[in-house]
Image 1 (cartoon, rainbow, N blue to C red):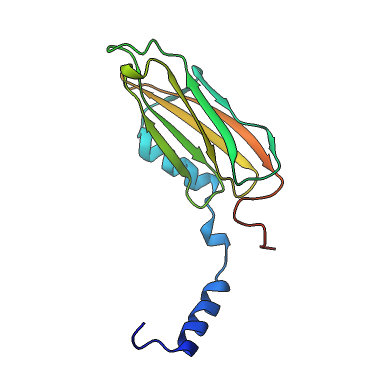
Image 2: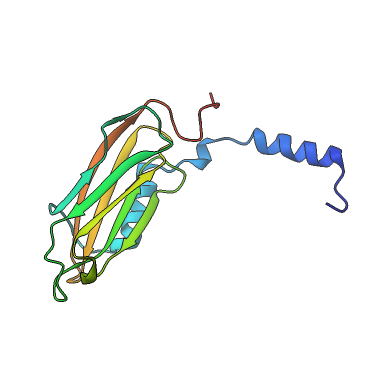
Length: 150
């Protein structure tokens, strides 16, 4: 911290604490743009994907999420990836899970953080270049990482 005084450090910290939080949130438009970045101009069809997430969660810090996809998981026809998106967290593209026929089943289970009540979208990408999706709305009563903000 050469050249940084206590006074300049405190002034900088104060500036960071008053920056608007709205800019740290994704929007439904940002989610749509993130989805387009993954699927391009390919059609996304509903079906084959099951998104299991509780419709109401008390705490957004650890929301259980399971995505499963109907697929034979053979060399010729399998799920290559599962992509998960949300519309209000700071980053609309939550994660990608890469799969192969060796997985045997096209299913992932994890926990995610949700900063607010919002829509979650799961998209499965197949080895044939097809995209299938499912979505769910989740109501969060206590947002992740934002408990002290008003």
